[in-house]
Length: 68
Image (cartoon, rainbow, N blue to C red; front, side, top):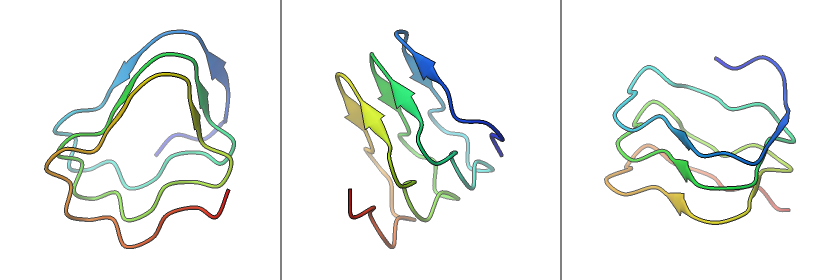
């Protein structure tokens, strides 16, 4: 589990991390965020901002999306 929100211009790949269960509220990723195959992640946090691409390919665990 990630504990603190932050800003980054880079890209993050957690592809295939089935143990990833949450992301911090207010996370800002200026580039790409790859969450493909992260089946333990059931929701995306409020305030999530991805500047380029958000990859959720093969993701069957999501049950809700943030309102914002």
